Image 1 (cartoon, rainbow, N blue to C red):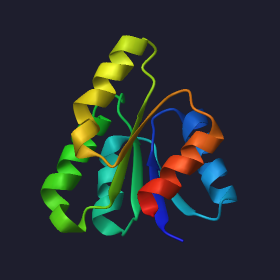
Image 2: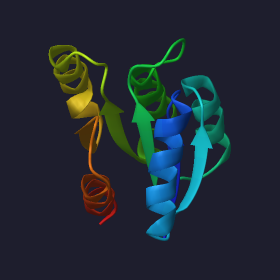
Image 3: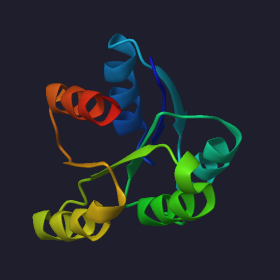
Length: 123
């Protein structure tokens, strides 16, 4: 199984995602913000990075751009998640990075959706 990184500033959301994916057999690391997530990506090898887009300081869009720019062909697969509260803002935010990631997922989502997206991206 691939090693995954989950970046989300909301501890409850991050822990839920990690728990679901661990039950599926994935090895998971987690980061509470984009800056820590970037450091982890540059010092570890991940098959997939799942990042929230709306985070303070280093947001998910910056994480995605930095990984693509600095890692090139070695960049892991990327999944963007967001649920900024206002449906229109979430849709706009996700559509802004859609061409830079391998999958997008709007919060809230069911665990089955998460698992399906992860399996599809990694297959």
